[in-house]
Length: 414
Image (cartoon, rainbow, N blue to C red):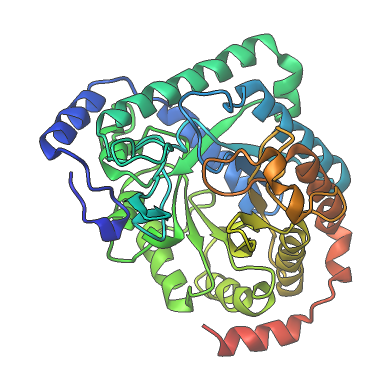
């Protein structure tokens, strides 16, 4: 399958080689099972009913190799510690979902990267090319799709080993652990799409939950068609340009039967826009009688570059967007269902935080991400501690937003 670059597909170096790789991937065992995908749908249905909270997190872009690879156990422990805080302070059980075992590709806003007088193709994740700034390294290599499969298989093997050896960790994670990634590279996803003989249903078996990004959610595009065709739980990221019509059509395309746990909307609106842009979208979901889950990604809408060009995010803006997200849902009588975070257990200095402190002058000290800035473990725990009390059922009456005003906005915006 070769798709044009406007669908965020790379310019692969050799299409015949790509076809060979896709055939090879199609002959390999599935990475996850249909039964586990169905189990995650059941768990997500509890989130849709307001009975649980979803914590989804992990690397911006996973790496195949190198000194900065984070052990799987450390990633899971970071999520487990955050989940423990969220559960104890909110009273809601927390469902954990990793951004791992597949997050090897990234959509990009530009096709090239410039340093001085040198221009090379942009880094699109280890499944496509190399981070090294070199024209040959940045060539889109189909063999890296096979390397992505092997890397995901190693991570999943780590998780299985940990499940048998570290019962405390998996108790803290809620008993099971599920994986997710952006279904960006459709040759890879299609090769790992299988029909379950027991049920006759089609599943994307590269991960348990697959999401569509803000840049690839075109209603008539191939990514939405892929999501509509698999039985996995799926998610769609939505930014500030999303309209009520977009929401309505996504519901009809992906979840026409209104099945709890099937569809999640992950909002990436920005701290300054969440109070204005979210209400009409929530109202459209209510109008459509959809059980879609609402999850807040407070990372991508709050990114900026420092004077020297370093990409970062302010922790205060991240926290403000999550609070605004919860306030809107409380005012509209809907469930603020979860968090979607780019984070690491490593003590990185990638997000500016005046209280840690990580100031702009400190970013270079441990700026290790392959693409976007991540919260470190301390910042992740602080975010969980600060927003968990807002999730208590009794907190709904304490919302600072006016339900009537939000509904009036819902009627006029979008």
